[in-house]
Length: 528
Image (tube, rainbow, N blue to C red; front, top):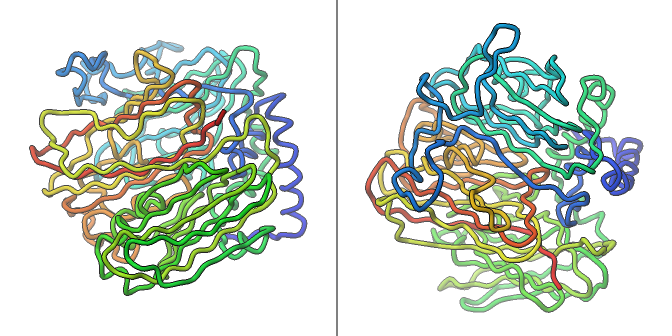
């Protein structure tokens, strides 16, 4: 990874961040969204101006209501033949057909795209994607459907990248009035996630000229996304507290700190190698955090840090698990008066733990939210009849920011055809309806894509017998038996809710069997 020069460039970028809150209140643009993306504090503030996150995808259009079980779990969420119409419509432009994937007629910003390979062995396509902004008849962005969003085209890595058999991009494409996305051939699978702003919000539309003029900011933001450095995290903090002790079975150890108007910025738990002789260690050691006297985090470390069962090293923008047994969180967690961080040993053995936290000053506002994290375990999840398995249901006002799913599959065949269905503020149909569990987590062709991968916003820390320490060598091997862990964290694609949020994941395996499901979820919420 490239290391930033922390003299001139860092101070310049810091100045941009200090100005970003002002700009966000007055105008949304590619620049302000890049500043927001590179600032971990941004997710702790209820967004101003507020937006609604929406998604266009190739979900099966016969799915209309959960009351109709037969159609609700229909699995033809693609377009491989003329009979399939899982897109908006077909336009004729200058005598040629264009398939409309998305059409949005309000101010907004595309914040995530996902496009899979045409099949599990073919990474190539001749389908051309076009992005029309504000009614212009000439596309602002045009190119190969995969290359535009996989880092080989105009959008650089890590914003756009090659996932497992997919092209995924998180680069913000803003528009002041409208956006239409089309392809020159029938689209296979796709997902386009976007922010919708109110009509009175001023949004500066994306242009290629602005993109080129802000090359330095784009590079700096990309380096921030990739440049987690635990030493700097602690050195730059105003207050660092730590504990190192043998923790008896059944007991917990805590760090309590009274520090008004602050935030917990880094949390590190270090264990010893011998503790991992217990294969379920990451299921039975818990992180618990209270802010201002109220516990908002209570989760096994495997779910909270996103590594699943056992030591599965990986890293994203907010979390990291290392080969030397460190579990690190970089979620910014504000509090008004005090914080208490605890490690609880629910195993049958004593374990050595090292707990370390860093805190710094925080400018608390009316929009500042408390961090929350929870989990759900279910050891008997039948795959027949088809069903929706609830990740989390929330009441209140906040922003949903991430999850880590761990499943145990008793058979070799693929288990993850199920789609995410996310209802916001009691809507009658989910504003985010997906095309497959692996698609939600940023890859595709799940039955064969069993290797490790990581990215600042999503990853697969383990699948079958593979992880970062044991990479897959036989590319065509198909075996998803055993534990798999999929992670996704959110920045610009955080899900804002004003009243409620309900997140279901469809259970859809090719085999009639009983699986195990476990999920860790994270969100920020305003408190009275």
